Amino acid sequence: MHPLTIIFGFILAVTIVAFGFGLVMHKRQIAYKERKNALDREAKYGASPASADKHRELEERVRVLERIATDNKVDLAMQIEALRDVQELDRLEQNAR
Image (cartoon, rainbow, N blue to C red):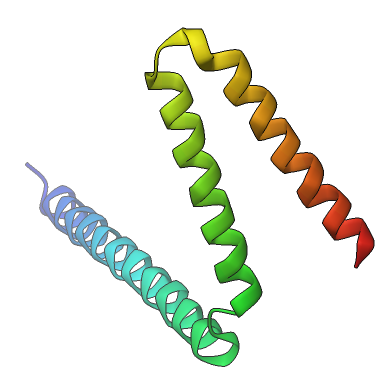
């Protein structure tokens, strides 16, 4: 085997390993920057009370939907109508503000 072929193979192997290592380091750096930016945003803006209220409201709606889905189907129509009434009241309340 020619010595230049061996040298070329060695350089090629080192290059592949170096690019692989660089790729892993780049991915870690991007993840670090994304996490740092998220923490900076959270520290700057915090969790606003409006978003916390909206989150609680959505959680309550999900609980209602889960209860509707798992309860007997006899009362399903009445519960859906009650939910629509609550949504209509919320909509009217929003418009009144």
